[in-house]
Image 1: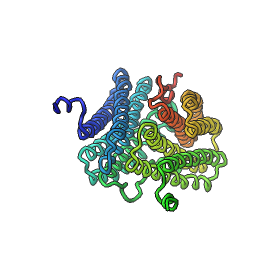
Image 2 (image 1 turned 180 degrees about the vertical axis):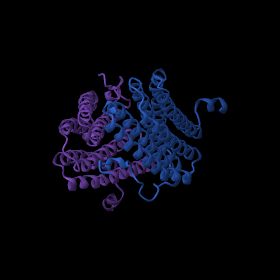
Image 3 (image 1 turned 180 degrees about the horizontal axis):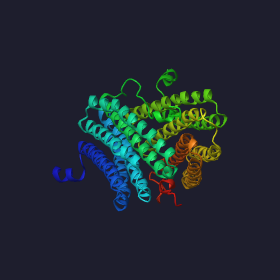
Image 4 (image 1 turned 30 degrees about the horizontal axis):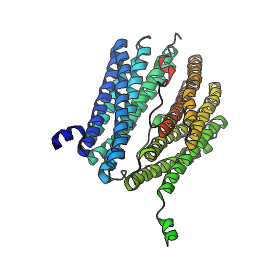
Length: 237
Length: 237
């Protein structure tokens, strides 16, 4: 009875699809977590922020499942060529999504501290930054789901938008701190929140690069602009 | 002539050793980079800081070599059981070392900005934090080199020391900023430098956990305390 056997021993193809589904699901949870983190930050909702922090475990669990399935596939199916790249990319991308989830949870955690102090108007710039990051992660995950290398490459170029927005916010927060030293602690948490979101953009870029690699078997050409212009911000600028 | 053949087609064992050597070398470069970054920060040496930033490329190149060799090994040797875990751990650990290198380079980059302003006495706490992080990374890499899971597990427990030291420094920097708003920009860079070093501790822990996994085929039991107590720092505390 080959059919009943099929239900127990899944096909190689099913196992690859399962892996793909886990990555898509991880990505959806991470994007939802980032949305929720910014929402609770804006609404100053500590209860909801605690739920965002707790939900991060779901992403960690999914990452463990991906690792487990990757090792199983490598051991039992010994994938080659494109299949091997599928498995490799899944492992890499799951680790980027896990980091995105961590950053979202950290945003929610810091928002709880901010709720203990008066609202800081400099926080107004954060939703726009988060929206950019969220769009980039969503686009990177869509490119991965479609195995669309060109779409992935376009994501890579857009990380500079986030870096520019982040730099503006960084300077604005420094100005607020200088003008009102009572806001220093709150603004410091906002700085780290902004930095978390900027890092999420970097991980979207990683997802895009791994998608390109999955399709083409090599990394995209040309250096990507790495990171954060605020490392060079001085008082004089 | 089997001997001349041996020179061209390396043995499986040689390939695994080569991978191991690449990880060890990557780790040595990363530890040296962290040392150098703190040294240039203390000496306020912008020229030397630029060299640290440029040297990060060596680590990125090594990471690409590791990825390449991992994919080659998986495709051609189809490793099983312990060998598969060797390859998997090498991939994971190389990615943690690459991040440690990035953080070290970012410390050096920010030190160049600090050289454009008057020295901030709050910077004095950084070398002690960096020393803890460096010791932890070195210990994690030694545990990996010796394939010593118990030694790796001890690393995991010591990350709390870094977190405690970081929290102290974080509060100190906030106090400095409040007392002298002219130091806000410099102290912000110091906050991010401290955060980078704290993150290096997390990556040392990851290396340790992957070493445990390599030996035992499962992750160590018990939750590890993840991250950074300063996410909860308020003015009142």
